[in-house]
Length: 358
Image (cartoon, rainbow, N blue to C red; front, side, top):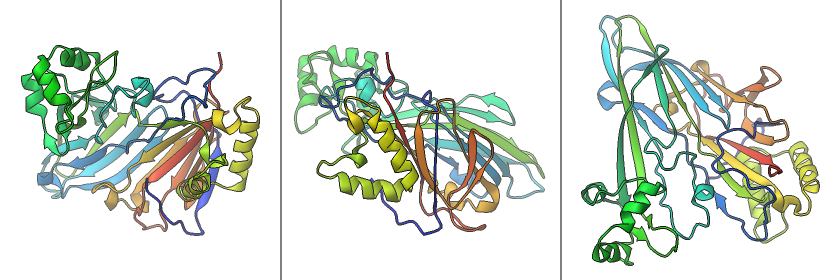
């Protein structure tokens, strides 16, 4: 997990945020933290890039709205030559999905995304000038850096390892093939579980769409998707177990925890009987500000909004150099320093909530 050192101008904003956002798994009622302390880290947000042949198109604005329900990115693009139209191909690279294993007690809880059985696992949708467009999806599978997509397709194995279709297809493999894929050297299959056979490969998807920018005009795009929300049972930065101090320092730097937030979390923990801080849910979200396109962002053309959502019981903390309250439910955040500053780190959000009750 990354760390960074924040300047003294960084603010910490603590408020409530929806608990109805993309749940990587439905919170079990009455969790037993003594039985499991599994933590699933979040994946970064997808990386949006124009195709290399159109890399010189310019972006005049970018508006980003973040919640646990969805992330929406509205952008406006201009052709490199105002006297000529431009054809551009946009590529949306989804972060690599880790393999699923039979050692995970509940694959849905262990999944870092809500749509882990779908090749469009961030449930991405796109619009051009307000009109929906179709996305071309290309998915690849790899293990230890080796591309095994064609091998799996030849054996009629769906690439998404968390899908029942993939697990059923693996179970139908010839015994000698299954044995080969399950051995230590290849390790393409986790065949240790009694209920299912899981693929041991990682998956990555690339989504793309094309558009024309008129001469002297602009093109607007809207990308919307369900974010990966890391989750785990137990607000460990409150604990007194070994490593808690390290976790607290990490969280203070990553999410700018302040006294008010810590007081609120301790109060929530006191009300989370009988487990205390071990019974709280911690969730994390990472928005990528350091991709090649996002890295060109400057404060003058960038707007980031964190929306509070509907559940006022959740606590959330994040870092920002300038924060403006837009309404009772949303805040505008400047995540990097100075009017003409550029991002030096990703934008991360920490959510703390109590388990849902029966």
